[in-house]
Every structure is written in C-alpha cells, then in structure tokens.
Image (cartoon, one colour):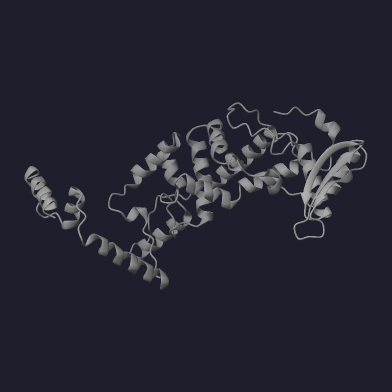
Length: 346
C-alpha cells in the first residue's frame, strides 16, 4: 500500500500541470491505480443493468450520443475505409432514410415552425438505382462464372443475393449501423439493406459504373463463398429432371444400383446408391433409406452435369476483367449434355 502511495506522490510531483479538479476516476486511470471501489462500482452497474433488462427497460446508446461524435468526419472516414471516392453530399443522401426527414419535420412543427424548410433528400432514388445495379451485375457475372448452371438457378442465386437479409448483413458488415439517419435505433434490417443499396447508387453517381460493379463483386457476390449453390436453388424432383436431361441427350434411362448397405433393420442404417446410364456411372448418394439414397444420387448427378460440385473451381473473384454475359444460360427444360459440350467454361 505504501509503495502505491509513494508512486502516486512522485508522479504528482513530476506532473505539476495535472489539474487539481480531476476526479478520482480519471486520476486512477492516469496512474494505473485500481482503486478499491472500482470493482464494486462496476458490479453494481452490471446488477442494475440486468435488473433493467428483466423489467424490459433497455436503452441502447447511439454512437452519436457520445461527446466526441462528429458525423461529417465519420462519413468521410467511411468512404476512405471502403477505398472509394464518394461525393460527400451524395453519400449523406444515401445514408438519409425518409423516416428521418418525416421525424425532423414533425419535430420542427412541434417547436413552432409552421413550414419547416428541410433541404435533406431521402435515399429512395439512390436505393432504386443501386438495387438495379446489384441485380444486373450479379446475374451477368454469375452467368459468366457458372456457364453450365441453368438460368433458373442463376436467378435463384440473384434473388438470394438481393434479399433484405443479405443486404442488411453486408450493410452492417461495412459499418452502416451508426451512420444511418432514420427514425428508429438500431435500424431495422430493411432500412440497413435499403441504405446499402443507396450507397451502391451513390458510388455509381460519384465515380463510374465499372468501379461500382467491382464494389458489388467484392461485397455482394462474395456472399456466395462457403455456400452450397445447390441448396440455394433446390430442384424439387431431381430424378425426373435427370431423366429429362438424359432423354434430350439421347442417353439411356437412369438405373439406380445399390453399391453397399450397412446396419440394415437398425436405427443407424445407411445405403449407398449409384446411378448409371448406358453402363456409365453418373452419380452416387447416401441415405438412411434406399429412396433417400436414390434422391441424393440424382442430385449428385445434376451437380456433376452443372459443374457445381465441391471439387468445382471457385468463382473467379480475382479476375477484374471477367466478361459479363447478358444472354441467359440454358433453361433446365432445354438443358442437355450435347448442348453443354458447346459451352466454354471458365
């Protein structure tokens, strides 16, 4: 104890400029002293916080409620963190939700302003433009990266990427939560997703379409990494679809064969089924019943046809000059092995 007081007094003699009005907490933090009351004080705060949560009284502090908050600096730093050259006025518009403008108009009327003069513009137009850019680039990019994947699957992937859940996840990932001007806090996933689309529209208005497309590729299309494309687009009847493809290709009917079974008549039974066409192996699958194994084998055969297996090459995110494809891919109703041979893959 004496050594602690000795350390404190010596530091005070060395630092005469330290104001005497500094409170005990600040002094303790400056000198690295852990006062005896700090731990009980924090325990009491935690106890009260948990009590308020049980009573349903919760208040999440906004980042803007802190004294060092500077919105202009935060917006400027946001653009620099993304490595993009935004026009600050357009970026601020992209971060302004229509609910915030309505709230400000009502607040000014309550203060006695008969006709509030607000120069702010909502992000509705930018969000519409950004949504179109995201969908247009995603579908053209995926057509080029997955040339054998049917058009129905490509559109399902685009619907997944442009969903409000994915848009909100990307928006929160780049730090939009504390920058969005809206009525509620924290902002709803729909509001965050809309603001992210508006940011894409603001980037297009600030720079160029090609730069905006690279931004969409890096932040939106990359959400497919680690995802099973065949689960996002799931064919309801894989055996029927495979039969149609083989029929259009002039191949024989698919023939399921039981490769092996284990644990028959037990709760842990497993069956391995392979599918053959004209004595050629085209897919296999496992299941707890023979029917399930046949269904999985048919799905495996379709994955091999469409080149979306786990061993297939990844999406070419590192190639900046990927040639976008405007023409739609083959429909699953027209897909055949003969037509697939004429398609150049990446």
